[in-house]
Length: 469
Length: 90
Ligand SMILES: [Zn+2]
Image (tube, each protein chain N blue to C red):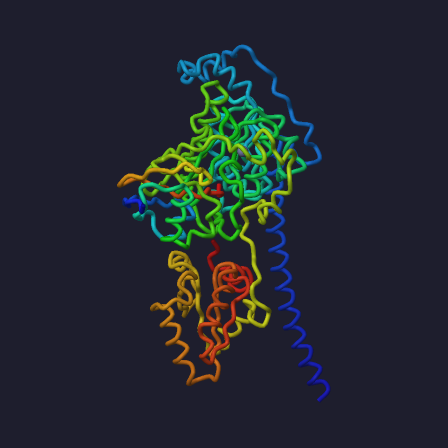
């Protein structure tokens, strides 16, 4: 009896040991692969960064631009096609070569403007960005490459510029501009390009350019639309003359929520480069006191004649009340990034985790799933058995709402209260939808909750094969 | 004396396009009115624009209109009024 038991134990232990060993050796393989990947990445990274990244600690160390008074033969040959333009000529080209330009934002606008300025022979280019390259950037931020994913955007743009024109002095700033460093950075340049993606930085750049007397070539883009204005030059208005009050944060749509077709910021960034070259060469900007409005769907360019300086502008008038930089995140009520923020509208008992929802699906509990994303986003990916009610339609009297009520009705025979779960991409809209539905369906036997973190969390924690966008 | 009315075109850009849900509309407005009145007339027809009321450029026939201006403007049949909120993406 004892012998028998002990031998069974041994057998069990043997199986367990084999399984354990197999698991561990798989784990070792995985770790080896991961290490190899990281080592390669590190090697690539080091090779790319033969330039020093500038940050808050070494701001004063940036290389100077040596002033030239005549063109080298190599420069004459390189720029011959633009040298023979009478509007540019040798004088204009020398001016361009003696100009320092700061590009803030190495994204969809910054990439095209940087590369055309470098191609045209701008003397010195500062590139400011706090972010690293991601796969979802490449459709519009065309200077970054697949093998530079994970690398600092400012360094990535510098690498691209060096490949096209090694005579440009290119300075990558891996940092965010803010009220304590912006003046120091901007003072070292002649022209500033606003290629940023958020409201707070737009006000910061405006004020910093007014205070330092630099022209601000401002571009912006979203979806199929783009805008260009050159502020603070030739006696034209500044950004605050036009927009004294920042927009309520909830009315601002960013590219990750609203979408953008890459070529649209491409077009706008190119116009920013053109305006900059005209300022640098002495031709002068066209979009000073003018707003270019580009509609890529209609293929129209409208030029709006803008107001002159506002007499009582808080920053650019003769009696300004803003004489030094302020806290722009506080002023705008929003962060100086375009990252989607997560809101919390619901208490925990009105929400469930993706893990709990996965369990509900696995155990085939009766429930109704509502997805509140747009039909366009539903086409990209969706969970099975979903009723789609776009957030703008939730609570209105329409077919989708009718479908939801029918689905709830059907389940009332099976369960006393019907659980309704609401999902979206990030878990923000789903919370607003729950609030509306709870009120609207209060006479039905339902419990309505949102799935915390939405489909992004689903992909992260439950189904790694689920598409992320 | 009540001023006669004309029909003008409204063009919506950026956030105003999103809020109104279309690119264009027409609206009847008095021939003589103050810039502030012009905006009130547009808001009355499209109250959904209220949240961005303080954050837009208004252009009449591609020329900026300052809302605080006290000089009345004169509208003609078919004039084009563009509502242009700033974009902030890049
Ligand atoms: Zn101003």
